[in-house]
Amino acid sequence: MQVSSRSNQVAADKLDKLEYKPSGNINNESVHTSEIENLNKYIANRFIKETDINTLNGLTMSKKITKIYQALHKIILQDKLMVSNSQLSSIVKGIYEDAFEFGPISSLMADEGITEIMINGYDEIFIEAEGVIKKTDIVFKNKQHLRNLAEKLISPLGLRVDESFPMADSRLKDGSRINIVISPVAVNRNVIMTIRKFRKNLLTIEDMISRGSISEKVADFIEKCVHCRLNIIVTGATSTGKTTFLNIMANFIPLAERIITIEETVELNLRPGHIIRMEGRPPNMEGKGEITLRELVRNSLRMRPDRIIVGEIRGQEAVDVLQAMNTGHEGSMTTLHSNSPADLISRLETMLLMSGMNLNPSSARRMIISSIDLIIHFERDVNGHRYLSKISGIYCSESRIGEMAELEIRDLVTVLKGKSKNEYIFCKDLRSLFERINRRGKRIDFEIF
Image (cartoon, rainbow, N blue to C red; front, side, top):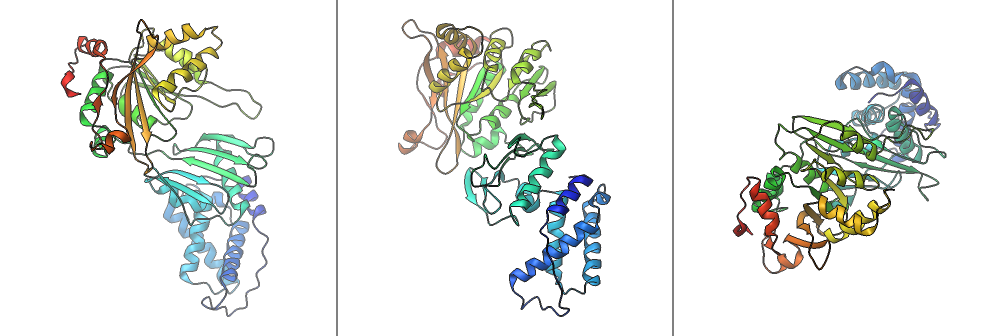
């Protein structure tokens, strides 16, 4: 990660102004911990003031570390400091991580098992791994140390955080999504930073089956639904695995089809094929230049897509996505936050009514019924285990317009009755949907449910 000359100077100016007078016969084993820390800060401060970090850009990691070590060794000899090898290694590591990586959280960013890093101030860092949130022992030196990292991460993206712009949300070069909030919006905290990481090797359907997140029979059913070009919405609460499963389903699509993906922040990682990827853009510092998902969805209709995949709908773009599903782009997919399939209907209705299309509740519901074939709902239990909870379909009956019909269900009640973790029960008859699938050449046996 490169740092500009201005950023380097800012970092030097913001370091603690430390004065350290070496005695010439320091015994590191007997001095107090705070004195060792002061010595480390003094050496690091000298290095940043006397070294142009930009001269190290373009070098390999090992050469950068060697250059840093040589510069520190020179400082130690000049000032006749007594520094142990382990102490010197710690200083080199800290300087390298601050200059070229992510500071104290570099090890967390490198750990592929960690999916979320939540920094609630310089001395309070939480992580999420395997669906479980826990506090770490990692801390920053002080508030300014954390603030420096925040500015370094977003400045190459053309963003800033200050009193005029106390919030920033963007995507890092490695694909991670970063959100920063500073005081006074962050009450009693100088900086709050949240980083959502994405797996380089995303889960496959086989991984989900082995983890008990879905059964093999239901996975086979969903794959047939994708091949048959059913319109699918994946729902669930925050961090239940909606985007992960959307990515898995997208990889069921035949390679010959032209796919356009639309996201606010790129998260999907589809296998190579005929894929066009588009990403929204937030407004600049002057409040101009924003490109919304709605604009991207409308533009995608002119790009001859076979299917449109929208990472998540959460606003006025809902009406354009549903219209695309119902006007020749069958087999499209998206995700939406909701607590249940029934809650999805009320949320979609609200989005449609607020889209500026002069829809009434009845016409909004008819649009939903005619556009969506399947709703796949995910949940996460208290142990962090994510699993497919329900597959629901929407159909129109004479008595109740838009009645929800569940295809399968798996919840705690099923588990408590002795069912296996990924065993599902067939709840209601949706033969019309099954017959539609069968007519498209994908035979599904009713007996599997």
